[in-house]
Image (cartoon, rainbow, N blue to C red; front, side):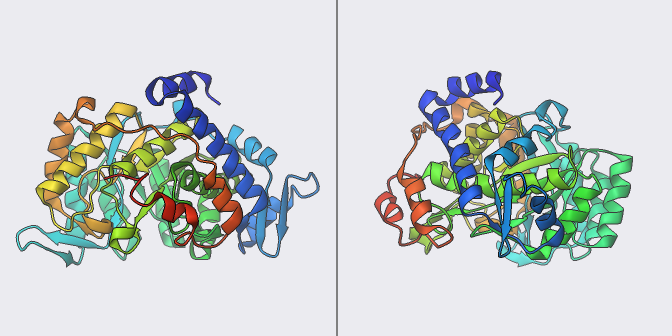
Length: 404
């Protein structure tokens, strides 16, 4: 633990909430030791098998069980916050919407074009409050998207690599400018490696490119319906990715991009990104990572609105203000996205950038500081790799813990 950061977090969150985060880390280690992560990728299996003789890992029936001693060993080789190229409190144009919102016609579903990508990159470059960018929208041609992004934006960027051609181009870009990250959602609930991406993950890590490791368990679906429960599941999945990366290539830069999410029973258990609690949950994830001295990239400032309404802009302001009040490293989704991150609105992008230029910590709503709820781990031990919709903790906490 970074002792100076522990004290900073205590001053902002309080002793009890920081103690909750310490226990979240311990709970995530329990999950990796006892539930493990399903993995069929041969090279990832192989690096964990190397530690079986030391009792630090077990690979059995395509599940990797990782002991806490090996996790702590891997965390020691991750370059820390002081060695990372993005400063604290950096808002990104991040995320990957499948569609563009037609701001004139008032509907979404427009197919993205290279011109849209260029426009996003130009806006990112021109606005000081924007620290960098992810893809924003997704083109089918990864190499074309990379080329447009780096042509128009000199700030830090992140993009996907899912082919040998895009890997080769990413390596060229990295030689030219070191401020890139490759995004991977290596795992999917419940505690399974996404085999569609695992081979590319191995190649990228072995090439030495910085990796942005995302995971998004959802409270009430794939994680317990309480703060520490869904944080522990999210943290466990990302820690697995960090361990795999460090064992494949010790010292490679890893960004903890755990993205804990909340299922909302009022909308058929879909994610609600406009909740105050969604923003604060991600801020708590960042603080745990600060204390572990890990570069960290979370979600905040987005909305559940389908259109760029006044409520959508109020949600952006609320999320940005919470982030500024409690501190963060990097935040994706704070500007342009609408409901479920499906549509990317340029009008919302420009308006939310203007909001970010003026917002202050004093604009943040009051938040009740969560403390450790033992029922979270009780749920994990009871349900394991199952789903949490009918878990007694979910039904007990509906409408009480995660607030709008």
